[in-house]
Length: 109
Length: 197
Image (tube, chains in turn yellow, green):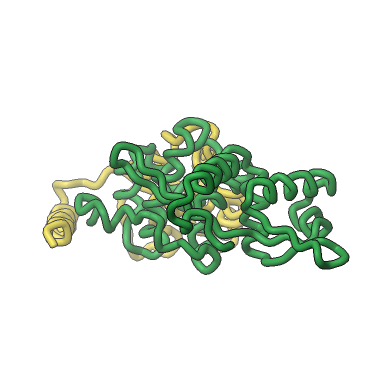
């Protein structure tokens, strides 16, 4: 189910933040069902980083994110967990360095 | 009468007001009724029963209790009595740890039975955690604090913390124009330099 980062692939939407799935899962899953419908209708797969997957899965059982059917969505194929970034790839390491510098500069202000 | 803590020098009123707020923060149904009437202005029992989907007898006895507590005014000059809410603001200070309760916290508590994340937060961590989370929801709602910083400082599992912030964001946006003491709610960003990004 994992494959490399392909930014030009229009059938894939990357979701880097946990809050998006949390928001869709709150209030009776209405929005989560709508998200699934949107994915099917537009033939899109949402790809989430391992970290987001773990954060969603680690939520308490009785919380809304704990009850959001992320695993069912993965089984159904419209959500996929991404591979860990390959840090030996120079583009990946350059992006990571830039991001780290950006965060540090913001923290020091 | 518009505020129960502003009359300085009346200890009886201050303590009674404290007990009234404590009662509102004990029974979510009363909290919900209070913030509903605060938002609506003047309402009759029939309107309350209808809009909150309560049995008429419950609406009547709850409204009567809030009149007794001094947080509702009942206008008996009209043929059909109307009720209006008194804005409450209560500052608690325990050995230097201070918190100001305003209608926004009362509304957040009143919403909890119908929001599984707020309900679970109170069940697992207590009302104090809801009050603390509100101080983060204020800067979060206006874009001044990220979910990650807020959930880390609240020491909540990240996805759950985000769900709580999203629930409280709705409360904050709803109450900002209604709560006359909104500005007195603590803002976690303004007090904790470590909390800024």
